[in-house]
Image (tube, rainbow over all chains, first blue to last red; front, side, top):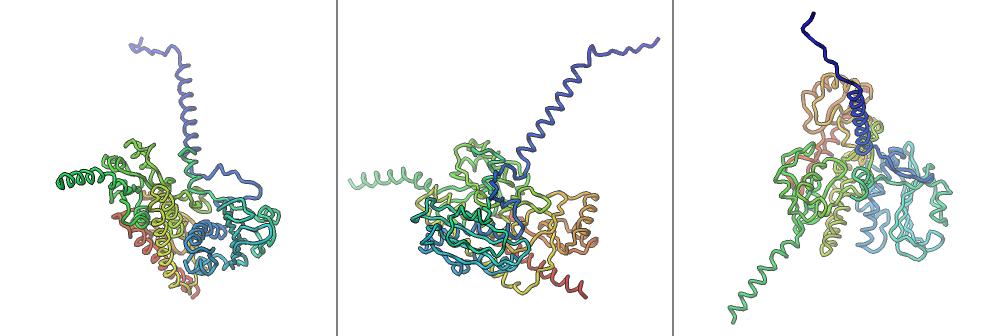
Length: 206
Length: 302
């Protein structure tokens, strides 16, 4: 007869349940952390006529869009300082991409930019437009930067939008409403900004 | 009589001094580029205070007691907010300034891009670029103007001048390589930090082959990296400034690429010129890579 004695727990049921519960809790916490802190740009709600600048554009279009997005500020501030809205040559004088003709301009399709000062008549009255087309890069689009400002016929003050069209030679509509751009196949580009990412990471009350 | 008036005046001046001193904003910054941006915007009309001392790597920084003291004395802080300065939130919380300290998130009006075609995570390195930097300079100037309306026009004007200065530097460099054929430039990076920089030169990154950021790769990871470089068809590889030269030599020997290095603009002393100086180095390195790429293609043709 042996001196040792095997003592069994009265029941292993609770240990098993606790272990399973712990594992489920760990998986749930990991899932929550990944959803909250992971870095995929989720959560952008887009309409059928909108496209995200983050993952919806070709590399060329994204490069041009990102520079146009910043050029909005330059255009607004130059106008504030000088009075008139800056034309393409003015923007080139300040080396502002995508208008300034350098390696960026060369490598992104040599887009031809034109500027329409405050449109005085028609349904686009009250807007200043910067239109780019004729680019020759792969997956190139046509582009419009629409700058809205305080002017008769424009209800949206300082409301800027950027549009692209998959035909790189698409001309600028002459007498259309902004909404009509959609009907002609123009897509409104929506940025995924640092603010969007911050709110995703830390919540909208940041 | 005069003596009494003089003493009264002195007392009034002494009482007003703290208020006058406080009128100059004390602006905290988390990363080196933000020190340069803010210093150029405010010039002598505000203080710029780095939240952490020079010499520390912001990647994985652990807050120190002195950081809390600095945070207590700030009027506003400028943050990246989407990467690299997560520790700042810990400092502000520990200093009890999490709720009341105004925060300027420099990237608020930057259109972000993914790390690369394959890696669709957000690229937080918006400060390693002229164009995305200018978006942040404008955002900071706008927000500082809101907090300090008396100097708003001054800040805006300085921001515009600084932006034009940075663009002129870039334009001068670009004109020096205007005739260089970059059509066969095939670049990979060992860190997903340089997308914005490449984009503003109209260049694209073919692959990001980062084993692990800031950590020396294992032998297996290095072998995988070499395989990835060989299969990606690239001829230049960009690594971080302090990438171990031994590893660089191994990669160059085992592949046909040449390694070039970029500054992450997040080390050294804080100064108004730091961003400009490091960006000059980065652009000069990029030009060397473009020249190598062009000559590499000629050699291949022979």
